Image 1 (cartoon, rainbow, N blue to C red):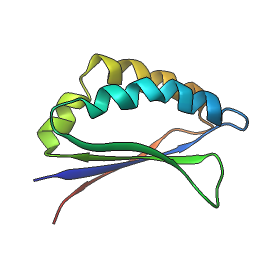
Image 2 (cartoon, rainbow, N blue to C red):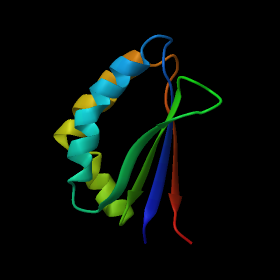
Image 3 (cartoon, rainbow, N blue to C red):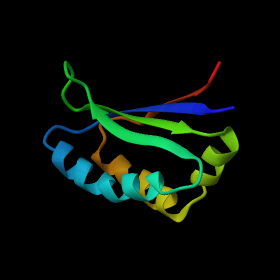
Image 4 (tube, rainbow, N blue to C red):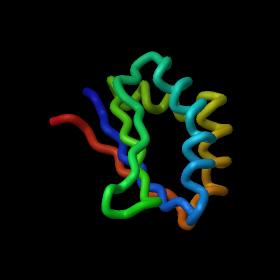
Length: 95
């Protein structure tokens, strides 16, 4: 059963460009992973600096493998340096 992940990030003022540049490699590597359907970063139209990462995975098991990859282990903690608050993570299963 496929799963969707929506991760909310509030980026520090003046840091959005640097954050996007930082995440480009993470996004590119993740899109190559087995089981990744989509992995994209969006910014709020009405809330500049509020970003979401929208992920679609073939299964929860594929998502679990992703979270153990070297690039996930590197980029997720590093990305926190650009944020005003901890990320909010929501995981959903397809109905």
